[in-house]
Image: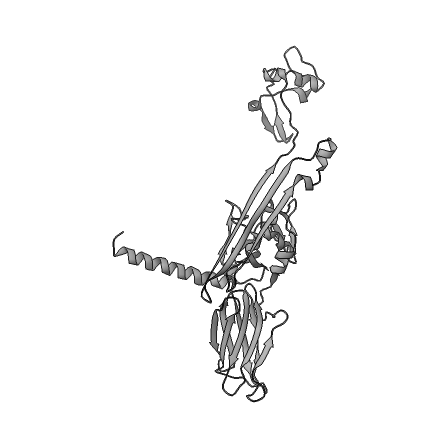
Length: 380
């Protein structure tokens, strides 16, 4: 690459990365808005608004407009502290504001005049109402992810907690079931999209609308996700009538991590019905699923890291029933098929029992009146 082309390539790569970052931020981030007013209810324009991420130290600033309203956008799911100040008013501080995936929440600020108190401090409690849009969905937070049992440790099984989500006919749970193989509000199964940190993680099978997940993150690496149905906004509208909007964990100003080991062993399992029926013992099985996570600061309040690892070692056997060829059949003599079917051979070598006769498949023709094949050339 020439010296003139190299800087242009670097600028193009940086610009592409910036665009992708801005585009993805709109998918899972939220916003916070509200009206700043005094004790009498009159709006306060020009108030200085400071929002601080209590886990990472990131800050966001805004100023209330002529109608006293402030807006802060592109807020990642986290816990925040809101600080508002204005001339002649006591500072207002509200901590413990929790924003979830794609939540557009409202927090109004009510000032006190100076001299009535030093600082108006409020500790947020309960869930913030989302009144800024009509998008609805079921949030699956850390409490659900940590406390509920999961078959094969597939976090997407928790999507079944959402109202209107049911198991597909003949479907199953676990890693082999398919993360999107569910029915949502009566829609076709396997049409949902999975958006992870703003990037679609599904692929559509050829010549069909069926979506296939490309990656299933370890349970301990998922911060939360939201099952958005029907009324989600355009930036996440990549699937059918449902989108699973996932946010993975990230580093914070505090070091944190986890380690786990999940064991499945045939000594701890029950035998299946078919083995019991045939007097066969339980099939040997051993599975170890292990891993861990670690996150923390690289530069406090500025740069963070988070890594996760999961490994699976599985050893299992099974039982099956199958037919094997007899000694005569292994020599090319299939005459015993006729006797098994209760028939006998004619002088020309045709079996009197249709179930015991072998036919030349290339000689068959389709009969519309019989709605089936008509065989014409038997093999003696």
